[in-house]
Image (cartoon, rainbow, N blue to C red):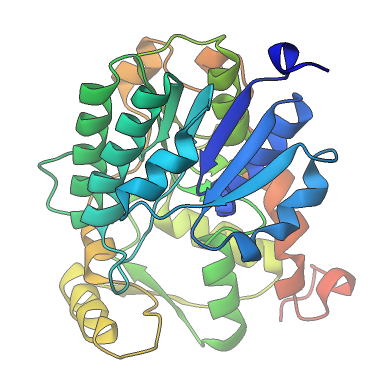
Length: 326
C-alpha cells in the first residue's frame, strides 16, 4: 500500500477515556488509521488489540499545552475531541480543558486542514450557573468560531460498562443503608448508551451527516433521577430507601467534601447545580432531526445493556436470584 492510498488518519483526543475508547473501537472497525492523543500514552496500551497491527498509534498531548495539541493534530484528516471532566482536580480545570482546550483542538484541526467532531454535553451554555456547563458552552462557541463546519454532539448522561453514573450508585448501594435523592429526585435524564454515541461520532468522521450542526444525543427513555435509582436497585437486586436531600444541603456537602485532600468527593457543589436542570434532548433538536434517530441510529434501552455490567454489584454476582433482595 502506497502513501497515496492509505486509509484516512483520525486523531482522537481523549481516546483512552470512557467515550473515547468506544470511539476508537468504532473507527477501527471501519478501517481508519487512528492516532490516540492522551496525557499518558503508557496507560493507553489496552486500546492496541482493538485494531489491526499498526492501525492504532499513540501520542502524548495535554490540552493545557498548545504545542502538544498542534503536534498531535498534524497530518490528520479528521480530529475528534472527546476530552471532558465532571469535576476539577488541580490544574485540570473546566476552563483549561473544556474552554481553552476545545479552542486549541479546533485551531489545531484547522491548521492541519482536518475536519472536526467535538463532544460537548446537553445543557452547555456560556451563561449557565454551572461552571461545567458554562465551560462547555464557551468551548462550543470557540469551536464554531474556529471551524464553522465542525460537528458538535451533546449527549445526555452516558451509560456503559465504565460509566460514572449507574456504577457509582450501584457501588454505593452495596454499602450505604440509603441512597440520596438530591432535590427530591425530580431531575429528568435521557441516558444514552456509549456505543450509540460512538457510532454517531464515527458517522461524522465518515462524512455522511451534515456538518456545522449541533446534535443532541439521548436514549429512548426519559427518566427522573428517582426512576434511574429505582431501575439500578432492581437490576442489582437490592432494596434501599431513597431519602430526599435538598439542593442546599447537597451543595454544602459537596463543597465540604471537595476540600478534603486526596479524596474524590461523591458529588461536588457544581454537580448539584447541574441537577437543578433537566438533562434531556430539546424539542427543537427532535423536530429538526438532530438526534440519534435523526441520524438513523436506534438507541439502546437501559434494560438491554445495564444488567450486563451491573451484575457484579449483586450479592452473589451472576448467581444471585433476583426474586430475593439483598
